[in-house]
Image 1 (cartoon, helix red, strand yellow):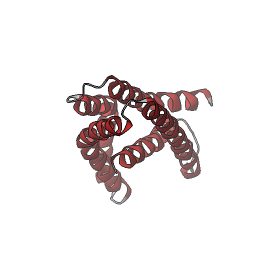
Image 2 (image 1 turned 90 degrees about the vertical axis):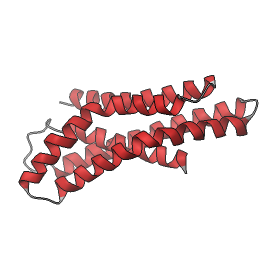
Image 3 (image 1 turned 45 degrees about the vertical axis):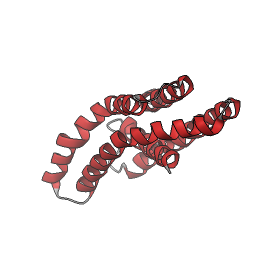
Length: 168
């Protein structure tokens, strides 16, 4: 359950990163298709990232002296990380729901008070999640995998932003 939830959060985060990369870059009046395409590109990027990270994890587990113990350690770290990521995701998704299903004033509030600041806090939330996850771990492979995965998620937003910038 924990690996699946972390993968889902990474893919949804990449979809939103695709949207953020496209936001404000088009002078089109009707932008729904433009934003949908950007979110699809972000989602596909997230799926590829999760697949690569999953493959690396499987290779390292196969090379481990005790794969069951290594997997248990990785799941324990991931479970602790979810204590940081899930509340953040719930708050962001509630702000998006408020934005999508409310009047103009509440949309402005959702954007200015929640979505904007939480977008800026995203790398710090990921770093905090990694720190909380790794706080009780002494396994070097777990540390390396966790730091690579978290860094990859942070960098995915930058790569999608760069891609959108270069397409102009």
